[in-house]
Image (cartoon, rainbow, N blue to C red; front, top):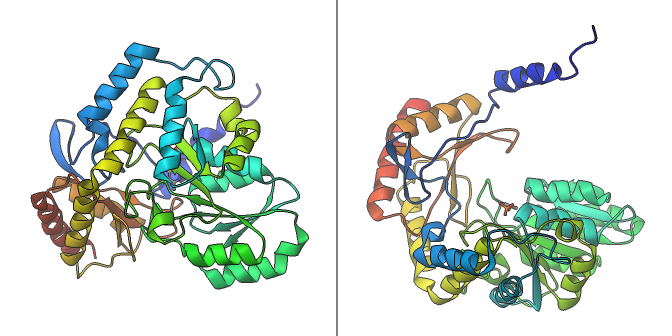
Length: 387
Ligand SMILES: *Cc1c(COP(=O)(O)O)cnc(C)c1O
């Protein structure tokens, strides 16, 4: 008898369990500030739906209308059969929101990063990547075949040193970074990165997944928030977080977007975004542009919550992502469980996703003051048990 070639899966799962790294999904009835899990109500501090748009009637109606007009699937690659007028409308709206010349929409943010990075650099090129970058940036770098070096998190001096040592050995160089770091909530030093990019002749790709619709006076993102509008940047983002839909995009110069339409494999060889997702994202962008108040309320909520948690070891954050640092995996899991018992849904984030364990809380515009007060009270009780 030969051995079962899949037997190693069981061993592998066992060691994942032993390390406390096993993951599972939880069924939530419908996204929102208040959610139901197994018929129990929870306050939701785990959502990326920062503006509460995923259940907004205007997005829902736009999606229904698009399905009635165009059907459910887009049936093929955008280059063959999968392109509707709606797709181009969305790309124009994104370009306008991002204050860029043009944009291209992918079927997810993950695919946007894979496609753009693989199109922009190859074997003879160099990528410099923030150590805490999102998985989609890291895997984009691998798929591209370029030599990839991590620089220390947000460390401009380390980035400079690596450029001084390595830049001359490569043809093109691409610096890639989250703008809002998804598991920490801090911001990249974008103006300094762009200055280095000018000095060393590098392209820069920023991931605005958690910034689009959230950061900046008009919701354009961190590029706007950090005063870098108009500089030469490849701006990636997602339609799946503050925009309440599904999909991803790259915004930038008209040339860049034209190039990606010709060279990004994860755009060319996959089915276009569904009509429903496209229409919902389009409606969301209109709301982001017209209803500044949503963003104002979100930021008021963030400021209020921070002011109520002076005794917590929060990671430095300039975004609606707040992380309570905990000493290890066990205390983080225990804290998440105790919070659940208190009716609070805020997950433990742990290795290998991040280097240190934490409770990650995301704030929404649709959280009410009473919700935030309940979170603070629960955190105070749980802190006594675990810290
Ligand atoms: C969520 C996320 C993505 C992926 O976007 P999707 O549209 O969900 O595929 C990429 N980068 C970062 C930083 C993210 O947080």
